[in-house]
Image 1 (cartoon, rainbow, N blue to C red):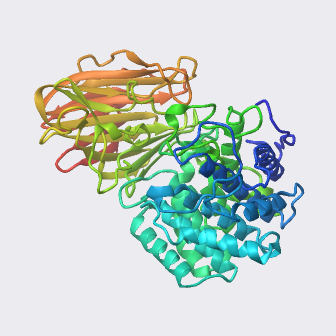
Image 2 (cartoon, helix red, strand yellow):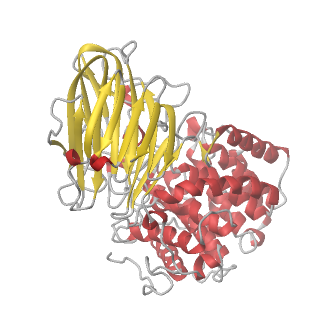
Image 3 (tube, rainbow, N blue to C red):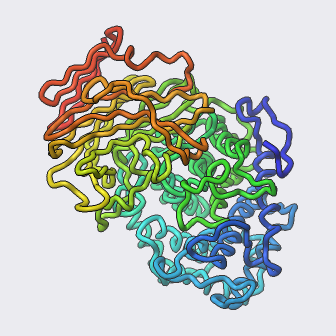
Length: 632
């Protein structure tokens, strides 16, 4: 990377894999903050970073710049026991005074008021970062403020308690605000009610396996780590509440048993779900587990994952030439953004700096780095609660996620093709590829075509998941949704099963109720011509040509300017079964997919696959879905 700010020399003695130490983390935090503060208003209340504004407007974006960088500064200073060599807290104190003097006023410094999520809600998100920053730095900032500023700050923050959050992780923002107010002796019935409401909802959203749904639907993504676990676990830790720490911490520990496998050997997190511009915030849960002791990982493995994720993005263009975190994944990538993302949105990456709450003598920093789970062995892990199947291969360090349970469709919403979301609707995601942009050929997608219209997958209904030694499976069904004309065909449904075996993905689809003359299209992984990856797709049953060539996606992915995607097509009508084998690998000597399977038999909807060399037999039955995999 061309460093826009200076970092210490790598230390490969203590950190043989990443070279990063606590000094690197401090230097990155300092560099990010120094670069961002060049864009502050004179009174320090807003950081108006350059770039396209969010839908909330530039004033809200300026507050976002203040709040999210404050979180990084708070972790930095609190982790150093109050040492503030760059005078950061003085700036944030000045900004707090200026921003709360006349909230809602259209002037240079005033913060917007906190209103309902559907009116002017973004300030509610930022209030949590302000409150958490104040809580972490209370001895050095809050306790030294003028009493009038403290009163004004409290009044502004209470807007989060008096207005309606979005129906998801947003309820943890007033929860966090209330936790801060109670920690400084300003709690009351209003703060208690906000906290109780959030905890009640959180209990209802817990699905097991350490995973929360982000609301009442089935959205499972990175918000589990950087929000749904982070806020309650950190709150209990800061409060010294042993009962709450045990309750929330045990769930974090369970979550990390699976989530720790979702980082590639190159440090990349899975490119899956929304708000991916937060980048290395994905490691926040790993670091928090180490800080609080609620983790199944060793300190050396925890730091390897967290430092690997941080370095991954710094080495690949996440920073602009002047040291800012730009909107995108590596460089700019418009297709991966949401309308709520503004120039300061990427600074939710600040949550990764929760790692700095581990003091310099903590084992998280002093233990020698150990391998990440993907570096230890090939793994296949089923997570039945969220309906996910994780597949990791040690040889190339790639982690793949097969999605049979996360759809980001709220319970009250209808299923429309117009709301197709590439970051949830695709059947597979990885640490080395991203979904293609809307309007391009969709990667890892099964589409039914009838009457000249092609379908997308919206609401996903899990049918089960499981794993054994070196293999695993997950299954789901969905109703194909069409753009233009009636959104659904009565009786039409698709049942999908993925079986992961080593580096291979057996994808079996049973289409029920398709009108005669319908067509089916299945695609594989999207890769670019410059990438050292091979994406292959082979269709031994139910396709016109078992080895059809790839098609182009001119807008590419977050990895490549343009991509090619392998594609199979075939006829369907009534009830039909279609079998395919897919792979994504960096192994230049990978076995061609037709040689991986010895025999495929389909009889009355039951599929039996004999793997090459008589090594294993996979059997898939429908009604109900049953999957077995027998080694020979």
